[in-house]
Length: 464
Image (cartoon, rainbow, N blue to C red; front, side, top):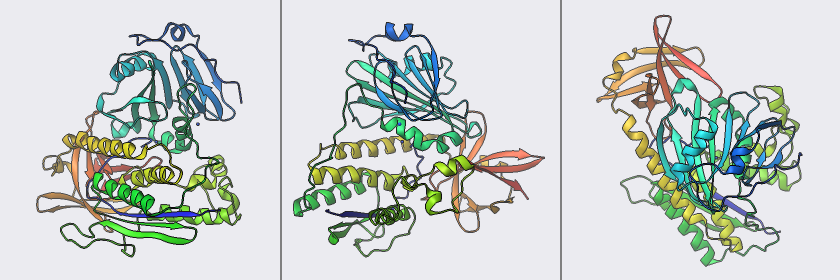
């Protein structure tokens, strides 16, 4: 069997960015109603007349939207059909994903109709929208991000996609903790959401080409072009085939402003490189039949433990494979698609997807930037000189040549300030690599506080 390995190391760019949310799945399938033949300003009559019904799913279940788009509904979720909307609700009440089929003249009109069907009050204001790469039978794909406040601990976005004359709009309305906990189930839904009758390209049964000079040149061109699109200073790239190194080299510069180029032996800060290397090491164990991708983690690592017993038992080895949503993760993900195209003469999709992803990231940064004040001169007046957290230690507030700097001891970052929809103020870390981490200013028992959160935890720094 032909064996192929890819290793890509990237030197991160100096821009702070915010990932899109996830960023980003048996009973018989839902009956399919006839699709409309032309755009319409309101939901189709068949959808509007459909009675509301709710099922609670005991297994991952193939389902369809009202107009026939297929997806996998996850086990443990409830599914309600209300007019044109198919609404999935997580086991944790109040977090929902709505899939709404409408006829509309454009994406904006489709999203308006979808909100009217799901939640007419739509309490969040649109923050920004952007085009996404078309694919899997969908065209005119557009994503809409809505402004939420940190204390809401919620992510809200919509994505409109068209197939023929029907729009399918996905509305993601999810508590952040639930979205993180249920991310694999949500990805199953989104990854499996396809127009009625559409079949993805399959490489099963095809014979892979050897990576000759021309195919390697196409791969390396793609990597260097990705580096340029995402403003990544340096990338080193290696390819192994049948146990032999067939390419090892680098692109860009080792240090901005200097001409020295990276190569296969250039050292990088380890960072997310561990994700790719962990995946490679797991794959070697699978090849040696010491475990499978579907092995429960607790079977091979009994000490593994998460927040609750049921979740711990459900985690499989394949769930440990993760890349992030920033430039290095995007490039790595699309490189996998490009590799399939090169090896199997697949449909040429990766270049368009790469260009769309880079454009989306730039637009997202441009939309975020007006909301940030750098340096936060006026807002800094509400900061105490020093804070402490029982879990995270001390935080000192420093001034450095006009910048306001948060010093955590092991690392430090200048900050910007941002005013949130609920009137609160966040201080946003803007050092390269910290990716828009924010601390929300507040007060507790007469003392100033700064609160930092991830999807599952909250840590409060209190004024000393």
